Length: 255
DNA sequence: ATCCAGGAATTTT
DNA sequence: AAAATTCATGGA
Image 1 (cartoon, rainbow, N blue to C red):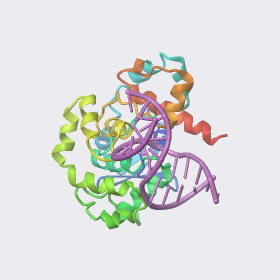
Image 2: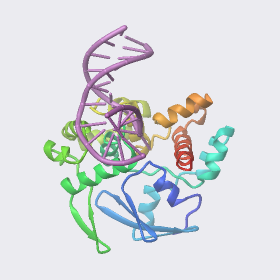
Image 3: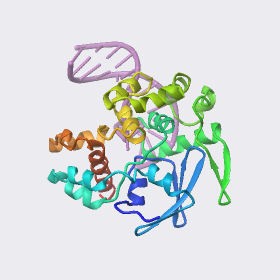
Image 4: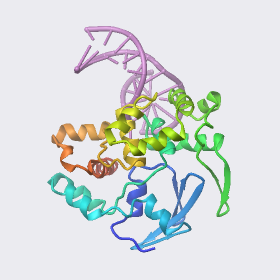
């Protein structure tokens, strides 16, 4: 399908999403029971998935120009936006997003990916796609074995996940989408292992609450240095965060 | 060996 | 209300 204002690499690799692998010249992206094989050549998106699904998953129906216009009103955002133009926020499954970000606390991205992969192997279903083996993300309610969770190298986060798995229902997750950003965040923070930062990630990456602005150690450092008032990017604070965050970790890697 | 990593919960000032 | 401590584990 033809796309504009979209960059697959930036979107997948900016740190918002964990379930993808790059093999040969394309990405294998996993969500729910799907394996999506996908690559981008200029404005062409080539994939085994339907256009409808990709449009929803990558939020391609969002007016990108409006977002960018809002961000570059502040000069600090001009460079990051130019560097990573085409980055979109992925519309993740709320359950997968929740468990992923509970397991993310105080850890680096490779370790987060490893734990998610181990949980999928231990609690998910095996599927063969393209002659390769994949495991689906554990379904809501299935993460009910604490001993097995502890084997997923989650550390103290295993207890949080075990509890959240028994507390959360489909109705709870569906209801979050109906709530305002503030209400949804407050509901999420009632759950063990979910504080302000993780709640914001779930709001932004799976509930389309684009006002959410997750503040981790990187962003916190940046805010202190620049005195940036991120509320000026309303209602796209979340996009501002992603551009700043990606620019920060990229700059760090090149040092 | 020592420290800390995209935090949160608990305890202590 | 803010600041320090603890929580497992892997990696630098």
